[in-house]
Image (cartoon, rainbow, N blue to C red; front, side):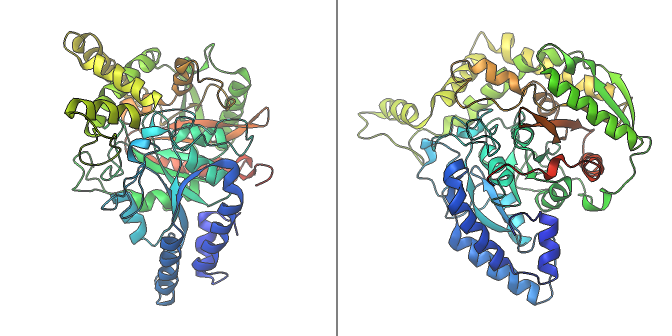
Length: 483
């Protein structure tokens, strides 16, 4: 049963081939057996899962149906889950049990999804390798000596290893799409505001967005359907109708205009990945798409702009973790200043401390105009580039990452080298656009992804293109050896 996709699980449950309880028990046993190799989970929620599975079976017995009713999933461990540890991969929140469910958690639970646990992640979602977690690094199931990508690496590794069919993730600068690419999954970052951020512990509020990780575009459509929608609790949530994403999967690609930015194919891109991307373009052309070269002239400024804006917002968001109300508190503080200093020094890891310091500096008197304000102006230029491009094309295609997954620890001494792995993904976050990564082949036995970007609220178009591509290729069906 562990090889079934979400769509296949929905059909199996509807046809009474198995029950949600049987499936849940089988996957929990598989997690117990295989996850010690991967470290993809922080917390397992066996009791909750079995309770939800039995309830889902009862609902089906009473005549209810639904693609997510009885389907097992997991949540990245920054979505608050009532009464269950929500750690954000940090010592700071190791003892925190959320008093409420995040909107995403509540919506999926209402749809009947079964929560198997909370997945490992880079601390406070800061990282591209899932190595900064307080609970240890996550391993890539395609090669256990390599990273799975981050910060949603726990969700990605668990789904890639067939421990469960799908999981939630979050994407601040590529943290769904990049691990999807490095583990041979389909991952979707929706338009900013499409999925509620209420109850999702913030890293950078103007960039964060929740989304699905699964093996197929069809499964991402199912999971996004359950996640998306307006939420009055979230001031950044957009009151926009949610289409039936599954209904648009089978649309023809005849005449679809695909733009390929020339800036994507510079010196930093592994030439073997470039070849796989061009092969993907040819495959889409066979399906009727029309391809043209475009330009995104301000892309070169994306990394410096992002790494001013995101740390600035992080330094503000993480100021609430001070040892006073919740989270880690140091032993025997001598005064309030000592409480703040030692609680934060002990609770936050090195990467989080680095970004807090950078952000505080960028926002400080005398540097705000020189750094933060200038980065926001660059952000607008990047958005304008995309708007101009989408006047000419329907989607933009390119690599998700410049390289395949690297070895664990290989970039620890050079944080900037890790930051550069986000060069193709961060522009979508800066502009608020939807983006999807889908499997496109392998380099040295490690997966490679192709990225698709679309205009605002055109997630359905991305899913349609990815689904049609997957009907005509088999990269997404490959399974890592041993799993």
